Image (cartoon, rainbow, N blue to C red; front, side, top):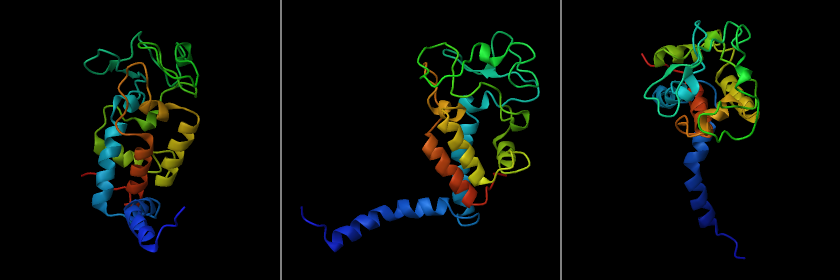
Amino acid sequence: MQKPTFHAVLVAGAALLPLAVSMAAAQQSPGTVSKADGLAAWKRIEAVVTHPRCANCHVGTDNIPMWTGLGFSKNRPHGMNVQAGTSRIGAESIACSTCHMKSTAPNTVPHAAPHVGLDWQLAPVGFQWFGRTPAQICVQLSDPKRNGGRDAAGLVKHLREDAAHKGFVQWGWQPGGGREPAPGSLDAHIKDVQVWGAAGMPCPD
């Protein structure tokens, strides 16, 4: 087998350079990526966190999850008068686990209650996204006092740990059963969070 020439290695390295620079920039400390690039990354993050696959369970103090099913023209409150209560797992009335079983099996049956590899529940009320503006969500996600004490690296760790359990994060991109997935991919979303963090987590005006 012929060894590659120095020129070939140089060309190949140059082709990979933009990706390497992008990956390195995404892992650097805040301020190492321009605000413009950070805002561009946030725009893609925004499309994910405001999508029904993510926002429907990030609801406020009414504790009522939203529902977007096959054939629905818009979001609506979860059917069957579901009320998750302050426990956020339905302990006060009907537990989420009554229908949403814990399982890592693929969600393939249309109209069946989806499942993930973690106990089903609403996100904490302090993490409300549904009904909030993108700017409000951005400020909340960038504030450690309101995002579970996380910086950008902590947000990425949260995404990866949840996905490792085949939890809600991964389900957002693989909802199955004919449901519309969140835009992009988990890997792209993680990269955007890294770039946004390296830009100092800027938010739109």
